[in-house]
Image 1 (cartoon, rainbow, N blue to C red):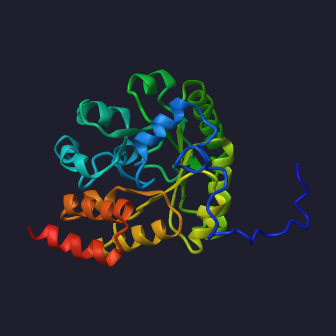
Image 2: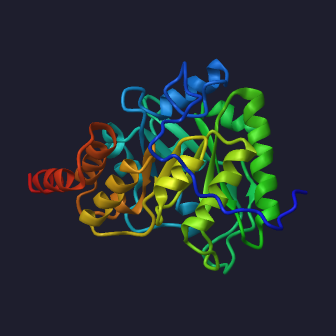
Image 3: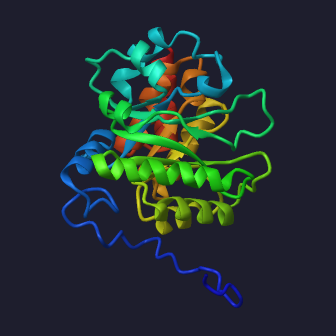
Length: 293
């Protein structure tokens, strides 16, 4: 093990310098992967903008029926034109996403805890690679706890999914989980996102924080930022704009879309930021106009 004594803190992130090893493909860190991996990544990320709008509706696997997600069968078809990737469980996807829907799929493959438990950090790999292949998933999402009681088993889950994904050219999305006892600082997210990336994932999902541009610069694969708790629409759009301007390659909005009073307009406004370069103010004006139609 490396000697930690006298180890210097990182400081030079070259945040204004583009990722160097990107010739031949439009996404950072994917250049040397095979055709199948690149095809899945191009399904998830828009090749023109290089970004993605994910819609997370996997909350039911630990929360049950959630406000705004009571009828996935009605909500998902309405949102489909305005998002790039559906992120959900195999049960929700098979029952509520029409196979002819031309959207990429991020398949939640870990499970095991519920909101009735104090500690959500102990999960298992609940979906095997064969079922991910049968569902034609574009990536497999693994909840990853760094600094929590379940860190070792969480990293073991992540490793198993990455290894299986590499065999069959299916990307892995490492979801940087934030437990109740974990610090939500740039120091934590620099540690957690880098560990997850170095394990071999092709996408990292994380949260906004102070000095996010340094977190994004130090992560050698695309970062997608979670919307987190429900915010006022204007605040959620500001969050999306801020992280995109600091190096994120997309956002994964759940509650900030499905719990909005106008989820369709909200999804459209987020797309304007992620794919068309709208500012948060421009997107807010667009949202207000659409929500009053």
